[in-house]
Image (cartoon, rainbow, N blue to C red; front, side):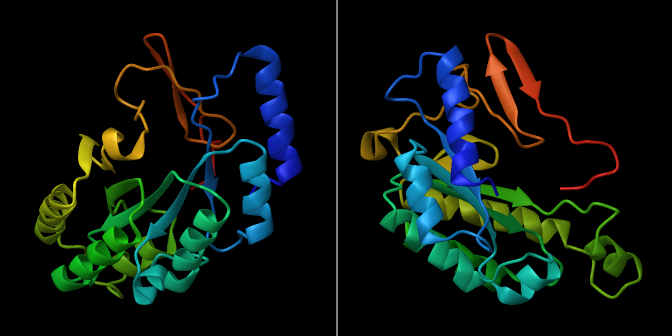
Length: 221
C-alpha cells in the first residue's frame, strides 16, 4: 500500500493539473492486513475522504481458502479504525459462491455487513483464475466446485436484504446507501466523469471514453 508521503505527491501532482472541488470524492483501496491507525489518519489529513477494502467474507475458513492475508477480525478492526480516523464514506466487497459456502453462512455474512453500516457494498460472484491455488485445488478435486445455482440464490438474498434496509442498487454488483441519508453521489455508471489512478485494473471515464489501467503481462491480481 502507498505510504502517506507517496499519496501526498500524487495528490499534489493532480492539483497542479486540475481544479479539484471541495466536494470531490477521493478514494483509496485499503488492505486489512496492513493498515494502521496512523496511516489511516495520515491519508484522511491529506484529503482522502473515501475508503474501500476487500472484506470478501467474514468466515475465516473461506478467507484461508482464498489465501487472503487477513482474517475476519482484521476486517472488523479496519472498519472501526476507518471510522475513528474520520472516514464517513466506506465501501467493502463481499464474494458469494465460494466452494463449500452454504446459504446460512452467506446470510450471516450479509447480517454482519449490514450491521457495520457501510455507505457502499459490492457483491462479486467467485471468478476462478487458473494460476491460483484455488484453481489447482478445484482441478484436483481437493475442493468441491462452486454451485452456480446456489450462488444465484445468494445474489437474490443480498438484493432482498439490502433493499430492506434502504440500500440502492445502481449497478449489477454495487449498492449504496441513499444519497438523501449519506449526502454522497455515486458517479460510476451515471455518465459523470471520474478519474482512477495508480492501480490496475482501475477504470476512469472522461467524456464518452472509458479508460482502464492495464494489468501487466504474466501477473495476476
